[in-house]
Length: 463
Ligand SMILES: Nc1ncnc2c1ncn2[C@@H]1O[C@H](COP(=O)(O)OP(=O)(O)OP(=O)(O)O)[C@@H](O)[C@H]1O
Image (cartoon, rainbow, N blue to C red):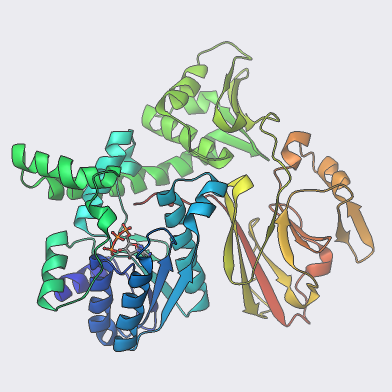
């Protein structure tokens, strides 16, 4: 029953294709050990290969036993197993994140790195119906829009959740019936974390007192909310093109066109601009309402928002930008091949891959570029500007001072520290989002291509 159900979820959401490599995130707990066994059952039928990734967070004293169980099981099933070790406590401190957030960020990074190493990689995670309901309730408690009510998506980019239609009881029953060994994470039973309190207190209470189908109702609501959210998001992107002019990091909203839009779309446009200006972290409902109100205020009225974001009323527009007060400190980060690196100073990611040389298809995208790999002599880094930086723009001798480039490109002074530079030693390879160096360009004699992608903070908050 359970295997058929998972197979039907995989088909319904088009989760995998023949020839894919599914990387299964296995913690050693019941859900992911069950997921591993089910994928082992289905792999031939689906024509896929599977491998396992386990992350040791260095938190629980008995975490070594999780590693042993996962490794032993993989050995028995003849499935490749990769274990990574981290000191999450230490990292959480330096990134100023909670242990949970840090652990999640690390896990998804490790999964992603493994995905880049395999052919047609997908990442399978053991979230199920009950996790979905808990996530929706958590979002509701925090105050959320449709996106939060949409909960955990069954598929996001390369991440798949084949148990999203199965309940915890079904998984438990399957494990019992097939004598699947798993580790009980004792922290799951503690009523200290929000999620555990919802699991052990809120849900049973509502089920007993109000509606025994509460969990399923939450899941159905999430499903509807997610599809409506996707639909509205498409409209928002289309309307943004019509009402907004963007110059560097400044967004000018034309009020005549903007005010003619429905309030739902206006609110969403503001949210999207805030997202693009930095991050939605610390942005609350009241901030969005204040910006909407600004449309009716006198010229020059300003609103100061978190992260140095400023919204200002002009004659027939609202200008949203990030002001100089929010100065970006000097940052520098090593970038490694086939890895996605998080640049905390900019809440963004740089992903670097090595490709075989191709003559065509050079990407025409501001944030994805190709370079001649053999021209790179030192360690790749991403950093912001330093005094004396220069870039080769025209011909091999045509060095241009970065400062001069910024002036010519009319990039405001306060924006300059926020522009990431990809460098090879002291040489600039790419002013990200702007020019690339002539010296590193792909040519007819290029043998290996370095593909570099840059993107803004991703939403790791699914679950
Ligand atoms: N340490 C880890 N290493 C690898 N994958 C993990 C790890 N922790 C969680 N995952 C993956 O993320 C999914 C969700 O994690 P979460 O922390 O919500 O669940 P969990 O209670 O640890 O689940 P499980 O019962 O599978 O252990 C897991 O089902 C698993 O696929």
